[in-house]
Image (cartoon, rainbow, N blue to C red; front, side):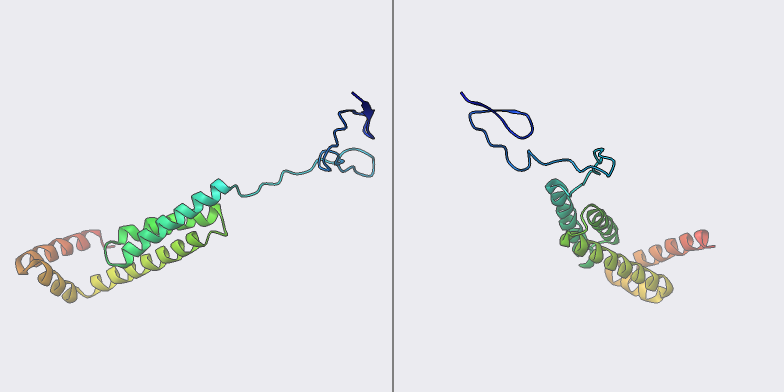
Length: 151
């Protein structure tokens, strides 16, 4: 076996040639002292996958909300979309889910404000869905709640 010394003073066995990365010099400042390099953090593939999953769940919840199922699915959809965007700003699914969730939440809030400001329309919808007696009971309960919790 040949023992050869390379330029760094290391013994080279079996004619091993190091890659250029292994011979890279650490940068030095003008005084000749090594410079501390800051850590670079890259988005890990795991975070990309998590933000895409959050985005897809956000889209599904927002679409369910837009289809008329519930206001309570649009808010978690928007929140999951926001979390996905914070984790990975390049996640298209998270952006779409966040935007759909926010739009669905705003639409539901506008719908509820309209219904509370137009009780005659609400009464008609309740009568159509549940009948006159049940609609009267629901409207009385709603008036009681609104009366006691209004400022």
